Every structure is written in structure tokens, then in C-alpha cells.
Amino acid sequence: MRFTMVIYDINLLITTSLYLGRVLMVRSCYITFPTTFFAIRAESLLKKFSYPYKMVPVPRVISSSCGTALRCDCENIRAIRDYLLENKLKLESYYRLEEEGLKISGVEELILDE
Amino acid sequence: MNKANDCVKDNLNLYFDNAATSWPKPEKVYKAAEIQMRQFCGNPGRSGHTRTLEADRLIYHSREALATLFNISDPARIIFTLNATDALNIALKGFLQVGDHVLFTAMEHNSVLRPLGRLRQDGLITATMIPCSVEGFPDLDFLERAYLPNTRLLVVNHASNVTGTIAPLQQMIASAHIKGVAVLVDAAQTAGTIPIDTAAASIDMLAFTGHKGLLGPTGTGGLYVREGLDLKPLREGGTGSQSESDLHPESMPERLEAGTLNSAGLAGLLEGIHFIEQQGIAAIREHEKNVRTLLYEQLQEVSGISLYGPEDSEKTSAVVSFSLDNADCGEIGFILENSYAVLCRTGLHCAPLAHKAINTFPAGTVRLSPGYYTRREDIDYLVKAIKEIAGLANR
Image (spheres, chains in turn yellow, orange):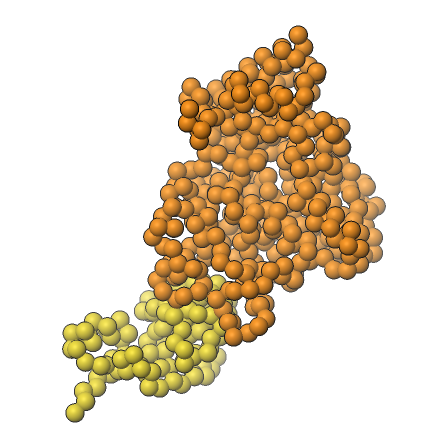
């Protein structure tokens, strides 16, 4: 029987997979940007913010103008989005991805209300 | 002799060509450019790995540092260019449209005159020169009468590279804005040494270089374009964004930046800006004013000398242009280097109209441009050398 464990904290993913030696599933959310300038500006602004995030190459299943995306826990995406918009950042789209090992098993574009 | 330091003699800094490019640079400028190439050499905006992100961050921080220095609220309105010439070309050729009329001052550098010359020769625009006084100040009465219904742009050299003369920016911008004319400021000679408040001065476009007052490496520079002005890009190509589209992105700064940026140069530039922040631009300006005043005053004692530009260093950047009776300026420069290890620039300084305005065309002048690292003893030595050369010329 296949062992599947769902990890929401993206920072735990790699260490836990290595420790267990198994394919783990992770659900994480992505914010994409129109250009690199806004991606790096977002990173710079979020240093003052408490939620964990990571700047990552955009997975190919997502369509994005800029090659760098922001990955975060799905429960924080709305707060992060609001903070970035308050700071007049241009954002492109929002996604939730289910990743199993190197495979992406689910993609959902999120519509976040104002 | 160490060629790299052949203007350092008896512990004196005899480099008097800071208006061409500043030297020395702060130590961190050299180191940052090297570290960028050795350790963080990723292509900014492209691959998405950590080195790319490091390069992205560096470029972002450089933009932000410039925005703070020039009081620009949105760093995305600053694009990086090769130098001030590149920035001026992007501004002029991207802003001007067929049938436009342009005003420019006689103190403009060839980096403005030649792009305008090309656009005029191709029959795309017309242009009028605002004459300048022998001290290099633009004739403001002439400016008032020079606007035409199709005038769209006024180009002003913030400080002349020949005389150092600082243009009355506030008055000129106010005059242009009343007529609905945009203003492009060439800050090649002033960025980093004379405070520029882009917001307070309502500057529409600001072109600057990184390797003079900003103390960065050559191959760096930039252009600020205020919100609402959408320039047509001169270059289009890779940006790392919207790769599926066969059209270049429209949002700034990518709109006017194509191809891999000079990240090693920008790493150096960022350290140059940090140095200016640490020293304080007011302190830099004060020091340069003092050495320029000292130089001007001591040169007044040289027999047979003609000095150009305003006497008051408050009205100039750190530049003094001179000529000697009975001496070719090229010869003076040659002797200064070969007998005294002094480096300076002679001739027309890529600004023929400025030399016409100050009556030194076509002979040119000898230009001395001290910098933040110039000290009193360097000036004393330099003036002694010029006195000896003047003695030879008048023998």
C-alpha cells in the first residue's frame, strides 16, 4: 500500500522526504508576477512580513509572464496578496498545486476576492 | 613604473579627469564587481535558480538605491543603460515623434547634439539652440521666445562638462511646463556629486551615468522616465518575462531594457551609491566646491592664463577649464602628463557648441576636474606645474 502524507508547510517538505525516503505530497500556493521587477519587489517587501514564502522558478503547468513565482502556504496566500496589493505591486495570477515527488498531480487557478 | 597608477606620485593623486570618469573608486566598488562575477554570476530574470535570484536582487536594490538618491517614488521608472549617452539616445529617440520641435542649450554634449542631428537630418524633427553666455548660462529670455506650437521637449545639461556651469534647472523646467513641454535633464556631470531631487524639481526624464560622480564602473548608467511618459523602446528582445509573446513587455522597467544587464557593473555601482550615502552627498559637494575654489583661485595667479566658467564654485560642478597665451592646449596636456604625471583632458570635450559659447572654438581648453579624492596638496602641486608651463610658454 502506498504511503501518502500531506504536508502543508513547504519548508518541511524536502527534509521530511529525505528522512522518510518516500514520495510525499505537498499542497502549496503560487503567486505569479507580470515581470521580474515585481517578483523581487515582492520578496523585498515580504522580508518585513511574518509569513513564510520562497521565490521559485515557475512550474511549467502554470502560465506566467515572469519566470520567478512566490510559493507560500495556501492558508497565507490571501494575507500575502493583500499586503502586496496594499504596496501597489502588480500581481498576475494565483494557483494551488498538488505536488507528488517531481510530479504535479493537481493545478487549480484561484480566484481571490478583493 | 606601475602604469595603472601613473598619476600617483610622491603620495599625490594627480588624476584630474574625474569629469571623464572618476578615479579612484571606493575599494568596495572594485570588490563588489569581482564578487558578483565570481560568486553570484547568474543571468538576472532568466533561470530562476538561486544565482539568478541573487542577480535579480542586486539589480532591484541598485534601482531602489538610485530611486532614494534622486527622490523617485517608483524605482520601476528607472531603467539601466550603458552610460549617459545610451540613456539620452533612448530618451530622445523614444520620446520624440515625427514633426516635433526640440529646444536644447548650447552647453549640450555630443550625446545630445548627435542624436538630435540624426533626427533632424532624417527630416523627423526640428530643433532650436538656446544660446549661452560666455560663462555658460542659458539665455532665459531667448528660451521664453523660442517655444513653437509643436515644441515637445527641452533638453538641459545640468552642468557643463566644459565649464562646470550649473544650468538654472528650476526656472527652465517651470518655463517649459507652463508651455506643456517636457524636460530631459542630462545629469552626466552631476549625478552623485550635486543633489538632484527629481520629484521636487518635476523632472520628466533624467539621464545619468554610473562611472563619474556615482563612482561605479564604466558600462553603467540609467534613465528615469516619469509616470505617464511611455517611450518607444530602441531595443527589444529577451527579458525573461512573457517569453511566449513575440512583442516586448510594455511595463517598466522591462519596456526599455532588453538583453542581459551588466550585473557585475551594477554591483560596483551599488557600492558607489552606498559610499555616497555614507559620506553624504552634501559633504561630497562641499569638498568638491572647496577644491574647485582653491584651484580656481590659485590659477588666477598664473601669468597669461584665461579661465572659463563662473568664478563662484556654487554655480559650477568641480571643473575648471583654462588656456594659456602662446600655448596649444594639447601641448599643455602632453607636458602635464609627461613631465608632471598629471592626467587631464584637452580639446573640445565632445561639446563644440559650448566652446563656441565661451569663445574657445576650435582651439579648445585644458580641463581640470578634481574629485572627492583630490586634496589641497594635489592642487598645490598641479598649480605649480601649470605655473612652470606658463613660464615656458611666455619665455
